[in-house]
Image 1 (cartoon, rainbow, N blue to C red):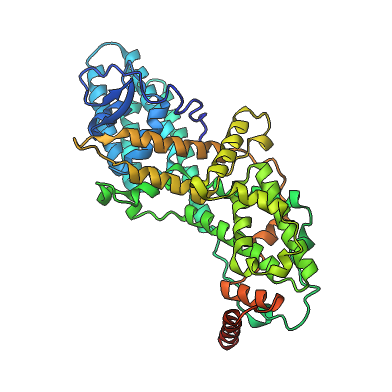
Image 2: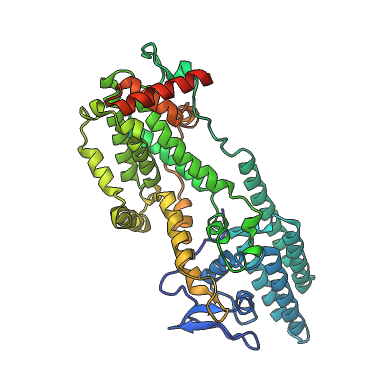
Length: 473
């Protein structure tokens, strides 16, 4: 996590670089509209990133440019260009007699590097980037060789960077192994009542507690998603400089793991419902998950809520008409209303906005929780990418587009930094993450054995699936 407070006023009314810096002899091609930076050449935007004696870039600009730059240039190439500008400025300052100005310039460069390494540590994962960083650091260290203050700061910055890279590397090594759905005939085919079989209710029968534990899992996984991961959505697509994108060589494990969690939770919900033998108990299970989804909504955990609803809407669960006829569906109808896909999920977006506003004024971490439906969040970024070009007809970078994308990503970063207020329950967590889940085939078989096929089509499907699994086993 960044040690410096991040973007406290990011992308608000004063976010878009309306204060045009005095660039001196530097590039002047960035275009402003109503005081807002909307486009510029890559060279000019890089110039605007690097501090001078009289100028330090707005932090919102630093974030937005560093985030979007990877679409057009490798981080190590950007570092090299920043280094060249630093050297030129340093040489100009050295011709003067005021040593304090040189120290002031060095302090600003260090601050820029500090923000870069804290916010985008993965930019320095390869040897080329580290080499460029060390080269710049070496040059800047020469500005204050007498007392060694600069050297100490750079040393600490480098140490923090290496720790961040190590932590991320370890997470990737132990990242969730995709659970294989259960297909064993003895587990699936219910030839005997399974009254003693362990289920979620035997582990946690309180909907609120389970919702809190789901939120714990969500926040833990979300904390390992970084802004550059999200930018892969743009980098992987049809940018004009696609051959330069880091996305070509960097696989986004964290996004995959988080998406897999959503799918696993949906399948776990369906499994817990379909494998229950008795209709009364199955009805109780359905109502329990409805209550869990409602508690997730109240907490602000929309991702788990959507996963639970998705699990209950899977065909093997939805076809259990005798079970659903006993369920008090009023609560479920309200949840489905919130997740109604019409008008681009208008109801959900209204609820999300309300949670976001609550988070901004909250005094406790409990009220700050906002976990959006991740798939919809990704689609929003993708939509922004598709409707706006990366470059304008004149060849300049369409920076207005990247302001919008960075605003979306900044919101996500703000939400993911909330410390979970709920204590971890190892027993419940273990069940959520390791309990067996059925494959789609197995779910249908369990569903048919709970409530028999109602028509010839279902009967044929049941026989085919049963035979397939028996032969496979």
